[in-house]
Image 1 (cartoon, rainbow, N blue to C red):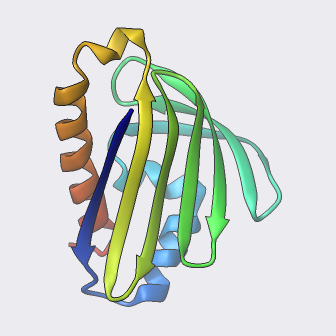
Image 2: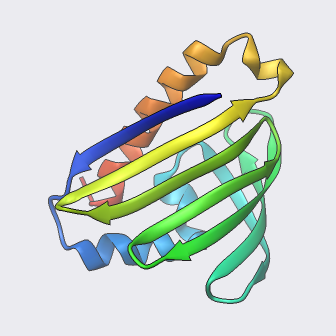
Length: 129
């Protein structure tokens, strides 16, 4: 299991970041590891979607809109688990807890570092930095 957290100081309006996070179709604009998202259902609180990653893989996710961010549950694909990104206490925080499938497990350490770096950049892009 790979568990890590990335946080950045909030340097803009909290509400604008939360609004961007909750706009599921906009995810590829700031999460560069997400090439495409195809929403299958969305009731305004929870969405089910197929996701295509920047690397050659795809999966299925459930996205829950929280009061101050989102939680993405990775249900099928190269890894399973969750990522939760929230704005709190003057910070934007993204917590990951995922398990890579057998094909990606051999490079887990490298993948974790890559995910951390990508998350840092996404948190900055969400703020327009």
